[in-house]
Image (cartoon, rainbow, N blue to C red; front, side, top):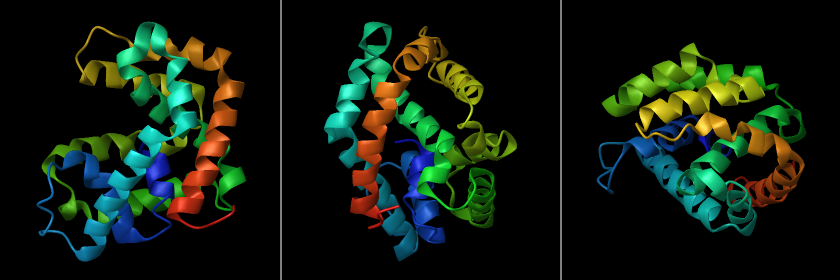
Length: 192
C-alpha cells in the first residue's frame, strides 16, 4: 500500500503516523534516535508492507499489469489501491478525505524535525500538491505516476498504465475491498 493507506492504518495516532510515513526513508534497524511510538510506527509500516506483498489479492492484482509494467506492478498496485481508498473514502471513514488529509499534513508538519532529510522534499511535494486528496481523482493518480516515472529515472512511463487500470477497475476494486477489510482487521481491529 502507498502513503494514504499507511496513514489510514495508523489509526489517528500521531507518532504512529509519523513513523509510518518516514519508514520508506530509513534503512536498517538503527531506530533508537526515535521515540518508542515513532519506532512502533516504523515497524507498523514494515508489517503492513509484508502483509501487502504476500496477500493473494494484491498479487493477483499485480498480474494485470505484467504486460509492459511487470517490474513496477507492485508500485502500481500500491498507488492504485490508494486511489481506490481515496475514491471510496466515505466507505471506510466517517471523516471526509479532505479533512483527513489536512489533519495528516498537520501532524507531518508538527513532527517535521523527525523526518529524515531524504523525506523532507517528498513531504513538501505531498503537502503542496495535496496528494492524499488528489489520489481520489484519476487525473491526480496519473500526475503522481508521471512524476514517479521521472524520479525513478527509467524509460518506463508509469502513467501509461492508466488505461489498464481503467479497463480492470471493477476487478481491482473487488480485490482491494477484500484486501483492505483484512488489513483493517489486522492493523486497527475495526469492522468499518
